[in-house]
Image 1 (cartoon, rainbow, N blue to C red):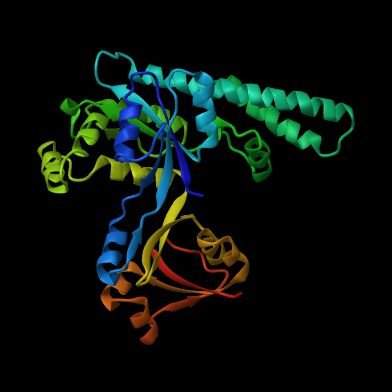
Image 2: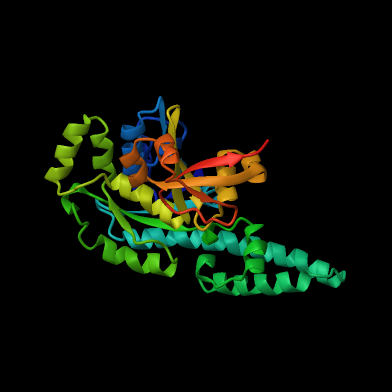
Length: 338
């Protein structure tokens, strides 16, 4: 399954414009599959010249702005939540508007935790073994939420994380904070990042980003060369959407590995610190069980040699077993049984 991303923000934040810019004309009803830009994939494709090139993708959902329940549901269903604050137009308090969204998510999680605690109280009275540790962990979570803090900022052990995960709490999801700015704030966003940083720090999020969603949407109507020239006029060396995609990857604890052959060159998402069989299982679930070994190289080595076959013939592919931890940027050929 692709990584799922929800975009939330106050009405008028420009989050739908951001979704449209990320979707690049694809998607419908607020849902789009979005390619993750990666220059390493482009280099591999230029070297191998495959019949097909496949980017890693994220599924991006534009959460409805007017309904608190729909906004909470979108955040709960996502792997990563993009939180958008409007730094343009007449809005005087963009950070306060985003804090109100945060409080909606906190209150929704508090209601879920309290409901589960009521169930556990009945189970404790009935003498169910094992209910007490869960109740103790959820009581800590309840107190943390009541203090106005997101669950992601609470130190949790593996058991507590598992119990809370069963409630699909929105405030336990990793976040990316975005200051949606007007073009007169380009290229650095003025004071927008300074104002958003305390929120990001409190949520243990990645560094906040500035995006001019209206400009990014406008650039979609231009040729690549025109878009590059237009960005340069604003002092933007790269697409801010590419930076946003990288932030989603980082927030979600993901790395990218590649497969490269004449039929297809492809980028695959993988959890950081995943062993080789788990990475193989991303390609096909059967590969997790039938993994034999991994033949591994780097993008640089493959581009120098020209193909995996050339590296194999020269004995330059590393052979790794089940304990190998996949690294970001690895190019891998998996050997699997039947």
